[in-house]
Length: 608
Ligand code: F6R
Image (cartoon, rainbow, N blue to C red; front, side):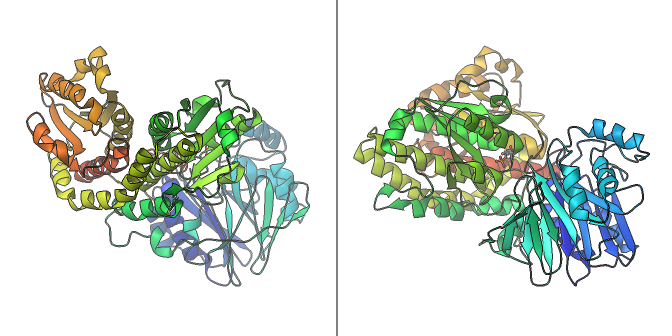
């Protein structure tokens, strides 16, 4: 949801800002802009469209100067056009601002500023910030930004430059992510780490309502009362290549191909001598036994991982689990207290609905265990326990490898809880651990067989509607398969529990409708065969995803059988999602869609 960057140093700022924005384009891509300070001039170049449009515009202008800020936008207030693009400048032209987030009291502030004579050019909430800072500015930019943010309600990550300050720029944040990259004789800000990785791996993470004064050789951080705050430097271990396409046509494909590696990273270090040992989790047997119910709270793909988690934790650890969409949970007055554990799942660790749900649960006394991919993210920092998914940076808007690792983390938690509570026998425990360890190899095999999926996708990319059905864990899996397809290919799709289809939705099946059936659950195999027959009888074309062992049987009833190796039904979702991700990917590629940056979407949803 919008990416912001900033630079101060000895180099020319504009190309550095543009390169950094390229790494953040996944956050929003309907318009972009930069503001650079040079001598006495604050030069702003911005336009509607992708970064490429901005680059073209910059090709016709001279933008020198070695201090600047930049923005790539996902519109909230005001349609994507040149005027609504960031940076926004104050009336005198002395202050330029880039912003990620939503200012909720902007109407009130706008009225106040209009009464003081300020004239507004755009429809954005952000413009009030530029005018407000100018209103408060009396020669001290940090003070002006501090006074301004104390009047803002809502969420913001800000980069601010001022025509009177050639030696520093200012950043601030609340409920939207912002990091400061620490270089040699140069410093940076960015909404996310990949933007600055090629320059530095040392960062500060800005906390809510902190303000940073950033100069070439120094970064000072203050709280919103003006007191200086001391920060720990965090060193990022990711390498630059993990945030690059490395020869793949799209980030999404590259990230699917990384699944074996990232699963190993997430699983292997946590299995020691046939036991699950969870770093970062401090929940003892007594605490576990006192938990009456677990809530899993997340959004989108992470929510779908949570639905799998419910099945697994209930089955293995025998603790009741409720799964909630974070955006619903926070407003539904949940019955939750200190005898509940809340498992929060989030790739980015910054999704605002999920973060606010976490705070709501914490306020009500629940303990928080989060499954997060981004180290140092807001959700990680505010949780009592964190289990990191070591998926590395996920750049494609559609989540893939992060989902597989979220599932792996949930299985590890379920196994850990089950063995602590004594609800699993030794044989099942070691069999499941063995199965988990084998998963990376299984996925490697699936990836080698991608040609069949690619071919089938090339025959169905014109479909108007595609249904996904499954039972039990396969139903949870179908939800994710269906989401993947619709978000990147724009084909209408619904996921249904196999047994539920006949209660209404089967009316939509007609000649040629594609139905994707997940069939990895041995105990539900025959029931699913009946469902296949029901849809076939109404003209459906059926693609099945199943274990190798079921192929001969299913070839008799389905039009296409995609196999995964013979994994156990319980761990099958971690492997069976991969062919679904590949199918969605190839359908979108055949349709000519922008796979990594689907329309209307953005990664890291930091607005409500
Ligand atoms: C879909 C997708 C989204 C995210 C959701 C939560 O491919 O990526 O549905 O899963 O926005 O994001 P995180 O996991 O960052 O909290």
